Amino acid sequence: MHDVYKPRVVVLTGAGVSAESGIKTFRDNNGLWENHRIEDVATPEGFAANPDLVYQFYNDRRAQLQAPDVTPNQAHKALAELESALGEQFLLVTQNVDDLHERAGSERVLHMHGKLLSARCCNTGKTTQWLDSFDAHTECRCCFPGAQVRPDIVWFGEVPMHMDEIILALAKADVFIAVGTSGQVYPAANFVAMAADSGARTIEINLEPSQQNSLFDEKIVGKAGKVLPEFVTHFIRDYC
Ligand code: BV8
Image (tube, rainbow, N blue to C red; front, side):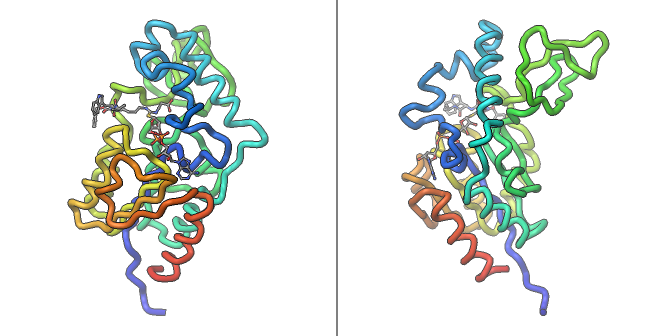
């Protein structure tokens, strides 16, 4: 078998990829933000003003994520299959803070907005896996005496994680695929323009046109759990 040149693929996922697993998106009519104003639960100012509310907001979501009926859906599994076909040519950047990509088998995953199932020491910045609830009185496991811990989440106004690695991958990408994101939150919303500037072919897979829809070369409308498996099967057949 001659050595097939496999394309470099960067995938960006948003809340829509976890919707069919029962995780609320941010902007559907009963989304998380509906119950709380962004500034109250997803900003450093909100955390400073009312830490108990913010700890509880993330404790509730952390518990929901570990409920037995919340499992990876066909979209998560299709992306894990695409990774196994492309190997090191593949990178998955997610805005989501759930662990459903990993539970579906994805390994090359960057959580640019943090992770729900870990806590961050307010003193050292070290993060550790944390499956239970925690609050203002919980002590970190890296300092003595223990310091306060906070959700390992990038709030609005904070710098997203892994940006250097993401920018480098976008500059080298042959294909950029956005799945289940409204394209309303920056800098993730800029990734399609950055990928296009480096000559990548850009594809949007979404339930409805996103705010960045006009920037994509190709648009596939539908539920990710339904359209992504078919897309991945054809992509692997044609390019791997
Ligand atoms: C930063 C953690 C500087 C929290 C999150 C004015 C103009 C422009 C920008 C700004 C501005 N004022 C402030 C900013 C910057 C700000 C921003 O973008 N604000 C927005 C509101 C305008 N951004 C920041 O502050 C970021 N930091 O900019 O720092 C910097 C920049 C670059 C380099 C260095 C420094 C930090 C933002 C991170 C905020 N934290 N998450 C938490 O999760 O609790 S963002 C939050 O929104 C989630 O991570 C979520 O993923 C993300 C984006 O939402 P989506 O994932 O797109 O979800 P959404 O519900 O919106 O859409 C779902 C889509 O799926 C829909 O289109 C729907 O149709 C579709 N869908 C639904 N079901 C399905 C489906 N598709 C397919 N199948 C389905 N079944």
